Length: 105
Length: 173
Image (cartoon, rainbow over all chains, first blue to last red; front, side):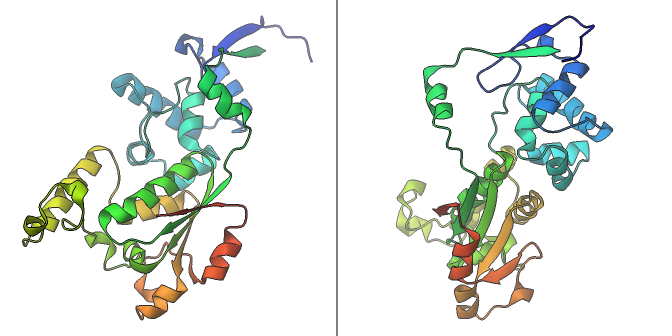
């Protein structure tokens, strides 16, 4: 391990592995969460999705359905699955610092 | 460097996670052609992909209606023979009842952001799920590939279905 200039920070996760406190979220932390989920380097397209679901969560109290997400963000279902392989709704919510989505669709 | 600490787990979730047996692959058989017969399979197929589970959808018998190009937009909810509809059979058989029930159900689904059948099939296919038609039924109904929507990956036999389902949980709807 290389020496860290930043001070080590402890972040609490909920039982689903999502952030327990949204105040802990930052863009740097999002990248760390993305690494944890094997999503890799976050691109502009990832950020488009992340920002959109954060906005949606603030307005409605839950992450959007995939259908709403693809319609309103302009990211297609196919692309979404490429950006966040193996479970886009859950992974994007996790990286965005939000709890696991409640919807089924 | 950030250290992640997981909150103490509740008993229930602990049991689920410690079993360590996650479903990796599902094969869904959709055998019914009514609107309410088709949706459970579609929702479960899409839901599987959302969880990162591989999904294969196999449409057989009247379930084929959901992938036949000129039928898939017109699936209906039956109003007779279903006690859970709470419509007396004699009334349920009146003209227009089924269309009325279908409209009501479609409206409710739209509110929940559940897409119409065609859009749902496109969406599921875009998630990377595979969609197949059952050969025996295709032959029985004198259909061919040109009758299906473009998302159908092929017409396969039961044997091929089992081959593709190796390692899958098979779910019949």
